[in-house]
Image 1 (spheres, rainbow over the protein chains, first blue to last red):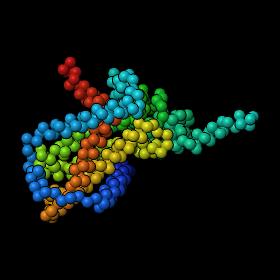
Image 2 (image 1 turned 60 degrees about the vertical axis):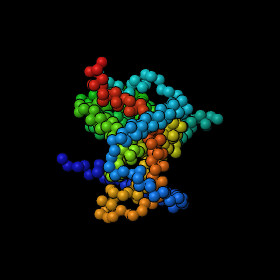
Image 3 (image 1 turned 180 degrees about the vertical axis):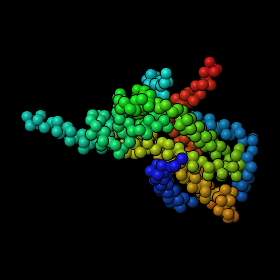
Image 4 (image 1 turned 90 degrees about the horizontal axis):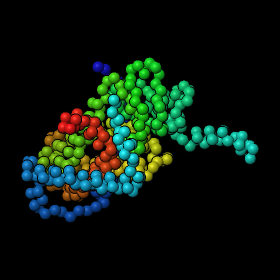
Length: 100
Length: 264
């Protein structure tokens, strides 16, 4: 199967645009990092960074999921209540309307 | 006064042409003639009545159109190849958008499935990356690098939305759409900053790729930036999910319909 050259070019140009935007944000981050000064850490900071995975940290993983879910819930409340009224239920039900 | 009435159609036409985007005008009102359609031929997916053949290729489930929902009249030769359903006004990428669902003879499910599982993997990866205690430093660094192409893929798949919203941002745009755009831009910036700072403080992955020895001391400033920007990423991911909740829910319902049916 031959790749379609215009499609490849289009994808490459989009990737280039994304890279350009990312480079701009990187420069801004570097400028910020140069402007701030952080106190040096205690020598024990390495103890908190184990190299191998630990199964005991699994609850933390689910905790992060719950944290994101809480942010999502908060966002749902803000976006639906403050920015626009909730769409009618019929519209939501028409999402990906079944084909039959 | 009389002159004003006489020239009103011309003024209206001029205003419409000068204020609206080049394709938005036609796409919103819908091309009335074949000449209108020709004007849109270089801008695929803009014409709601005469969609390009790529829409019918079977790989695209839904296309974003600029205008309100209108009945689609396909040429007869295309009608025989495709099953057309009426367009719907749905919440897509956080903004109310008109989506015309064209169901080809080829199944459209794989693309939706792919997008859904890609997003699910990204979600799980963000959770895992935040728990360094669980993953360990080596897995954390490699996972952080592996997530970059997935994010790029996610952005490429949402490119039509990005392009349309960027074009519309400075013109007429609802508050919700503007907030959604800025939210996504902020998320992109935060992910970029996290990745860049992560590369700079990498102790295992980057030295392994570059065949170099890791720095004996870590730049503490970059470490702090990496940590707090990652916290911002978590919050923004939650908000991003909130804005796109309708899409995620609908996609999940469609993908798991088969399983849900068995249980019912």
